[in-house]
Image (cartoon, rainbow, N blue to C red):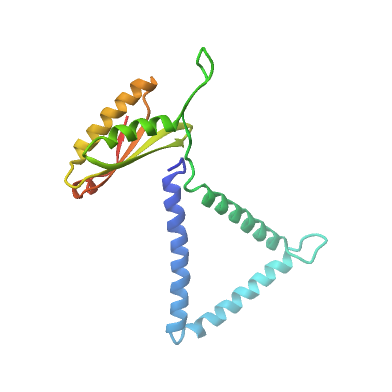
Length: 201
């Protein structure tokens, strides 16, 4: 959970998948079709000749290399760096600070996520409707978002479970003096597994 665009994630996955699918299909056709090799050989020779001609016509000053090769290598290096940055970015966003108020008259006020974790875990742990609960916080576009994951007992209504958590969240808001954006995830019993995540404001 972070501020990475979900559409960008899916676009990258689809693009890589299509490229790999095309490569695999071409390799399979070349292996299965008897005439594929005879068809591909003249095409590959034409392409190699044309590429060699381009490289000879675009020499980089003072070297034996074509500036096209240098450009291709530079693009590949930039692409690898971007992919590494994108990969390392996934799964991040977790924060230990729930509230950081710098505008307080008595000085900066910092509320750690452990305050919400202890309060909600203790409150929900006393309820028979829940087997367990976990609380964490993530920074999304500069705003701390509280994530509450609760495991319900079998047969518990997701709506009833959400109402219980919402009441505890209102109590937490009153305690902190600030209304926090919350993502609630319910898991567990059969009726709870049919319920999607509910975002509470």
